[in-house]
Length: 123
Image (cartoon, rainbow, N blue to C red; front, side, top):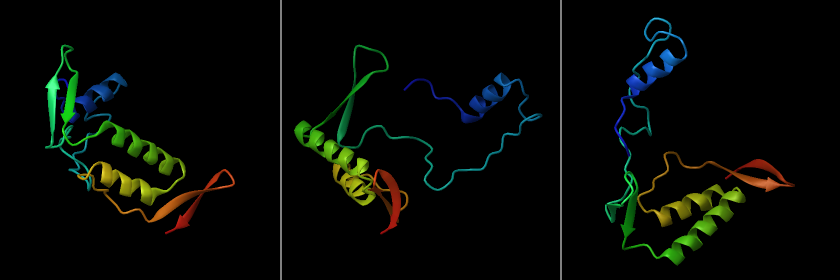
C-alpha cells in the first residue's frame, strides 16, 4: 500500500503546487466524517489471507471459499445486469458475491434502456 499520507498534508501540497498559500489564499476546513466515509479501507475479508510476493507492494490474496468458475459466472451476470440498468439485480448479486457488502442507501429507482436511451423508472 505504501506509506500513509495525511490528507491535510496532501491538501497543503496541492494548494502550494497551484501557486497558492494554505490558510491564507485557501482555507483547509476539517468537517469530520460524513455518512458512509471510512477512516481506513479493508482490502481483505476475515476469510482471506494476504501473502507477499517477490515484487514489493504486490500481494496475493487467497480464499478457501471462492470457486473460480462460479466467480467468473457471477461477474458475467453482474456485467449483464449492470449493462441492462437493473440496479436491484446488481445489488442482490453484489451481496451474494460478497456477503459483507452493504449498500449505503437502498436503490429507489432503476434505469431501464428504452430505444437505446436510459430512462428512470420508479420501483
